[in-house]
Length: 123
Image (cartoon, rainbow, N blue to C red; front, side, top):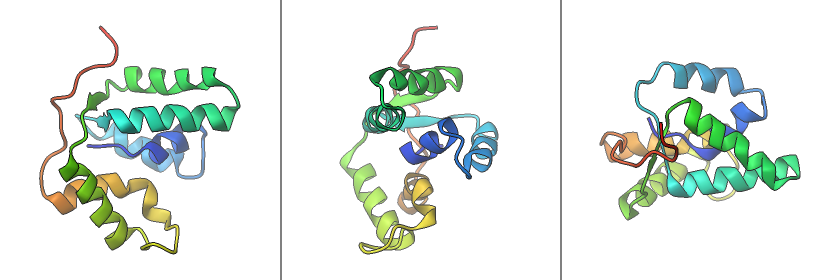
């Protein structure tokens, strides 16, 4: 399963959807995020916590859940964009489902999540 940055932030910040997202992730055998998502999530967490050190929460989350860091392709970006316009409320609204859009993008593209990425941390 490919995880969106806002789902990770929701879990780390203990937002309303945190329990739901945690349960979904716990049921998956393979988890992945793109390198772009890893970067974005680190920046968002640092901003929310007011310190660059907060990016370490993302590092720990990725390490603890053994999440693969995968390269994002243009096909991934196009599928994510299509999912946003189809499921995410278009251009003018911020939809509740936005946190799961990248997950939907994989369904739209009808292909499995990438698992060939590299691990960020050595075992």
